Amino acid sequence: MTIDIDKLFEEYFKKFIAENMGKYTEDELESKVAEIYGEFGSTKLDELGGKTPEEYFKEMSSEELVNCLADCVKNGTHVSDYLCDELEKREDSHALLVEFVSSTELDELATYAVNILNASGSKIALKKYVDVICEGKAKESLIEAVTEALADNANEIKEEILAVYDKNQKSAKYFVEILSCVSFDDRVFEILCDEFLTHTDNLALYATYLSKYGDDRALPLLYEQIKKDGISYIDYKEMKLAIEALGGEYEDGRNFQKDKIFKKLRSN
Image (cartoon, rainbow, N blue to C red; front, side, top):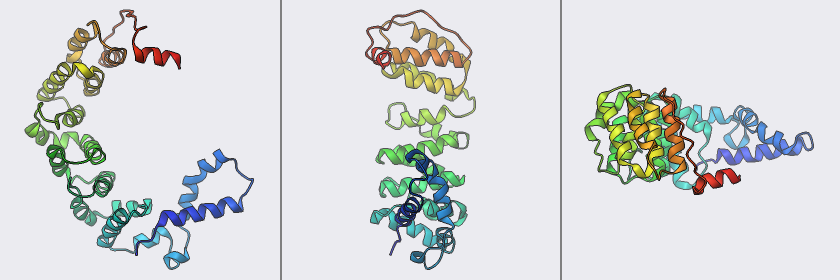
């Protein structure tokens, strides 16, 4: 039977509130949640056989921890931070977690596995993350998790991404985000510029990728696009920020009074 540690914490927190009635405002209580959760982790609980939450997971084998994670997700039980923290420390659990990283696995379980592996600094599943994106079957939460993990390790996985990148595939939008995080490479620069020029319907997003990449050779492209009539306020704003981030300057006093987003921002 999987024990819901977070439910035990809810009871622990309720008891704290009852014992400290009137001592704290609602905002103060909210700010103390993390502190109290830390204290809870080192509190011996009858429901855990007299163990603390930290001890409860520490005494499990890595295989038991991985199975506990899977059981929590599949049974709809909250996944405890203490469980995730312990898994992060167990290098021998990483290979077991990789087995969950699949577009055919439960999305929530696969996402937990990716986040734990990434938080631990493990690079064991980077190529598998690329495969998940290429397959195009995973749900958005898993795609976001593997994209973030790959972006954090962009230089290590650059060649694998360049080998499968295809601008005509759905996967391209995720790979472009990751490639914007690598060190300077002419192949990557060409891709980022091409994607920027191709996506005239979303210049703001692709301008941020050029800005993040940091190669000032992109300035002529940005100047060319920002001068065009009919661009939205958001596109204009992001391209202007990208230009400034790359060391350029731009100001033309353009009027966006009729732009819906501009009017909404000004009215707030």
